[in-house]
Length: 317
Image 1: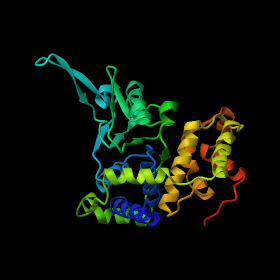
Image 2: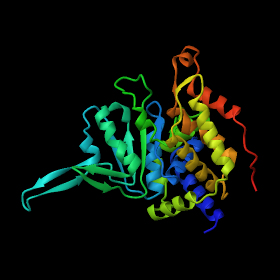
Image 3: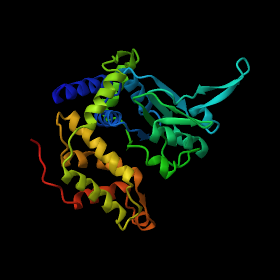
Image 4: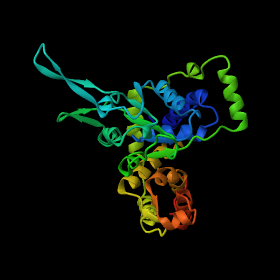
């Protein structure tokens, strides 16, 4: 298959999801990019802006097996991972898979559960496997976690640990719809559920094929150096006490390939990096006290770094 075929198929997927999620085209694109690059997505926003609808629309359009869990303080790690139960008939322990065994796992309000339960997600997000009682079980492929969380400071929320935040390829915020978008939402939901109008246009096998294609997108050495220079700038910035980890640079590299594929290119250009850099980096850095006193935000710092780093001279061909 050629590059135009894959970019056309990607556009078909996007157009179907847009039927259910109105006025959030950039968010839809970025979530699909994460799926194509084997990444996970954290969506932080207030309730009622369509986070769950977005995940459900993707599961239907991509024909993926999906499970949803509402995280609350009483959710146990075994609810997520599964557990072993004794079978008296054959005198053995049998494994009962948890809710995470699917292709697309929607973890709703992930920051309302305990740290112990949150830690159950660490292995499955990084290794795409789950270990219970010393036995490791592989998760289905493709595998993506789309997690939602309410803004920090909302009643009953807990900060996600840095190790878990670092496992999300992207952190996004949907925000309120604009005026015309909200009018369209009211019209679309006045008679039926927009999700019913969404049609499957892909399946798990095709997503795996797309992931393989994306992984082979070409990156010039100057692009590698550009990514590392951006990451290094966060580690030495006077307003930051925690910079980007190597996992963060890998995430930026991988999703830049997805952008190139979506644009019908077989190579990455600097614009791909600058387009998605903030969504990859912002949740991975930690401001120091000087930044907080100066009312500097993580977004401000990332934007400053992008502007300060010399862009390599690579253009579209």
